[in-house]
Image (cartoon, rainbow, N blue to C red):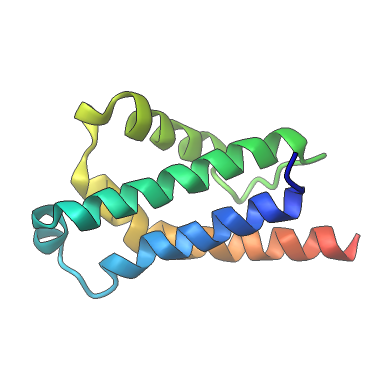
Length: 114
C-alpha cells in the first residue's frame, strides 16, 4: 500500500499536469487537439484515483477539496466516456486544477507537521 503522502503528491502533480496544456489555450484549440484532450483527461483520472484512495485513509477530509465532484468526474471519464463534455474538462483543467494542487500541497504539509 502506497503511503498517503505519495498518493496526495501524485494527485497534486497530475493536477498541475492537467493544467499545463490549457494555459493560454482557447477552448476551440483544446477541442481540436485530441491528443491534448486525452492527456488532460488521463491526468484528471489519476488525480481522482489518488484522491479517492487518500480520502478513504484520511482521518478527516478537508471540506475545501471537492471530493465528490472529483470522483464524479472520474466516473464519467472512465465509465461514461461518451458523455465527456470537452468544455467542462477544459474549464476544470484551466480553472480548478491548480487550485486543487494548492489545497493538496497544504494537506501534504499538514500531514508532515503532525
